[in-house]
Length: 131
Image 1 (cartoon, rainbow, N blue to C red):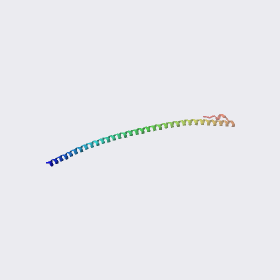
Image 2: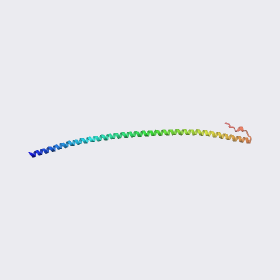
Image 3: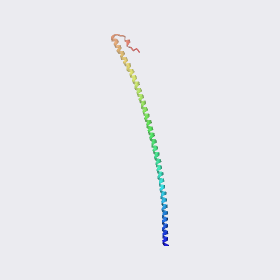
Image 4: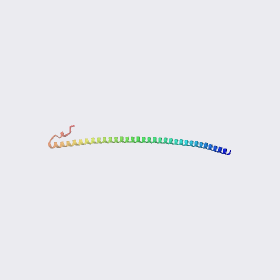
């Protein structure tokens, strides 16, 4: 009977251990699942945060490029207008100087004509321009 009692006690302890191990295994599985879910949530949060940062960086890049383009366009437009004004001023100045030179040249021709007429005896009034 003593052997039967020992065998029964051993059987109960093995069965009890196996039930205990089964519970521990189930608990470990639950903990592992919770850790995996937590890691998955953290990965998803990191992914979303990365997506937002990338979108923000892209928007900043687009805004910067657009601003630089507009600044360049304004600078080119200003330079064009300045160049156009300078060219117009130079043209007007050249026109004025040309007219002055033409008048001076005509006066020199008139003076030469008068000098020649006076030396050779001619009508000085012929030297006046006939517009």
